[in-house]
Length: 231
Length: 230
Image (tube, rainbow over all chains, first blue to last red; front, side, top):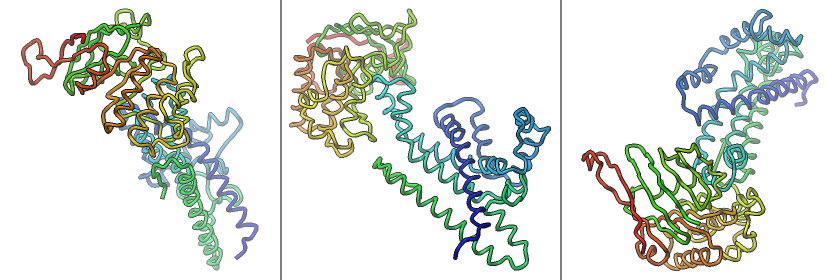
């Protein structure tokens, strides 16, 4: 089974959208995970709930909210208009939809790994002369790294599969927003599209499986010897 | 160089009041378990902020509630050897040992890695991961890590527990050599009277005493501690 040029460009677009989504969401996910893991403040449960909303809301609602936010007269749209940019019906919009949908999974994985870092080790680093930032960079981050990596890959796999929010927000435009799931949906609408659906579905399985296996291999290779696993 | 401690600490429901002045050498902090010995050590290290009081070592004031002084742990130059050791699991022994040394200003360093490894007999362990070490090996690495950070004084929390007799002798010998050859003041927490009698130049005994308002047993408050020189 060899891929047609069109299928190849669909895969490349999916990877591009997912990588951009994870690249953008990872710092935000890490910051949110750190705040949720280490701080306590009034309204924390509300923040926790907001972060998790995309996990339980119908994706079409997320897509619709994004559409309102990034419409020309929406808050996000106005900010982007200052730079002469728009994400509507663009692949960047698909990346935003994927990032929002992947965020809760990433925050959960990273938060767990941060909570597993023993604060007593951080205290020990402080007595040895390391300030807060150095302690974070040399103790907290390396010990949490497998979880951060797992969160990134989980988010990546989730982004590859993102459908509902994307099609609502940026529609289903070939070469621009038609990622793998949207291409499968489009092929299903066509009479005689069965073979295309089979091939695209097989690609989706292969990509997702490859992402999960790669993350497990990376986690093992990091060799902290703490029995951390993604799978 | 002396320890000059006069602090009130709060841990949950308990109040720990502790006042002592100890000259150089090895000072043992003794008392029943739960009386707050480790908390006093943490306060000196800067990991626990006292309610009030003053902590000075030599001429350096580490904490003074009246003067608004509270140095963060990384500026106190204390070599803390924790009861649970706290070796960094993601670093080999060599990098654990060098962690504090790399951060210490050159004039504070008084040992090289090779000297410390010879002093503590841990040279063969440098490439190992902490989780592969025995209790005695890990204890010596923890002491080495503290010494290499160029401390002006040492804090040791139960350095002799969880060791068999042979290892215990080895660690006692190490502590005696630190006193003799490095002349570092040491504040040591121990519950073992025999070890204290052998090692300590002076003893600070912490006692649980009833609350002033008389509600003794319920309100688990502990008060003053006195210095009992041996």
